[in-house]
Length: 137
Image (tube, rainbow, N blue to C red; front, side, top):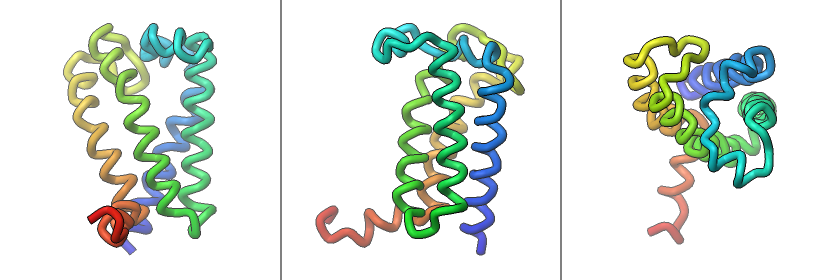
């Protein structure tokens, strides 16, 4: 039951952030490292929109696809890993975004990322797939 609530809470958080990526696009542009635009061929706004779409898709998957829960948990954790350079970029640039308007908040946000990764894996039982896979021993 606790994992179920944690998974729904994570999905709600991803939904809120995904919507913010569409409605507050300008506020997220400063999180995009220059190498990301070069590597993808997309401009900052397109990357913000794409990451918002990914958040919405992951949120939907967390609640609507129970048979794929572990895979979506891994995908969500990998998404959190992928966006971490943006969090570092935000802290280094001192870029204000929704809810992150001080250096302290931006710095603390860096330490939230491993928590989100663990949350995604735990709430979807994805971390259990490592322990139960005989090939991983």
